[in-house]
Length: 271
Ligand code: IPD
Ligand code: CA
Ligand code: CA
Image (tube, rainbow, N blue to C red):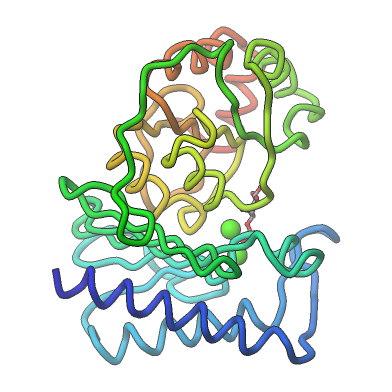
């Protein structure tokens, strides 16, 4: 309980930090490709969060997108998995629609998760067997649905990408419609709250999904990779998260496609 309360306080502080910092100039760099951006604010926010956790819980470990915890290879003890700004492209281009995401795991098991929609100052949080909340309001459990009556969130880049295009295209055709929010953490939040019924990604990292998986689970949803396999919380993977009523059908489009499976194995390895 103490960690849960501390986490809520910490992510709200991180939100204040970003809102204050972003009105001043900041550098924008690219990482793996010209569209993979990082700013000073991402790095400073991760350091801000890292310092607070280390002061309060020196024995806990922290894995962050911007360089903290690169040596972490196991899930022993308490592990904080941090994305200081999820949706950096939105942050740079729009100045909104981005989030801070913090997932806490104990010995590899979900402990609590927090996602802050920074510019709306809305906190989504959850802890196992305690429910998922939007600020102080408990999220309703997901209702049974069908894919043809569902909105699904996915990134259009995956739909046009050779080798993996076919099953994503099938999902676009079979769903009522698709959405793309530009922040995986917010995609997962919107799935937990029921704005959309599922979220699909070909490649995410632990900091993108660690908190969102806990929210989805506490809202009655299910998360696996696109082949239906369980997620290892310290490994990158594809993600299929959302309403259990359409999980099997969605998974079926990916597992029926041999070239998708072999490309998935090439990128993410064997389980
Ligand atoms: C990215 C966003 C984006 C998703 C990418 C992520 P970042 O995170 O969540 O929506 O499609 O795969 O890398 O780089 O903004 O933290
Ligand atoms: Ca991210
Ligand atoms: Ca990030």
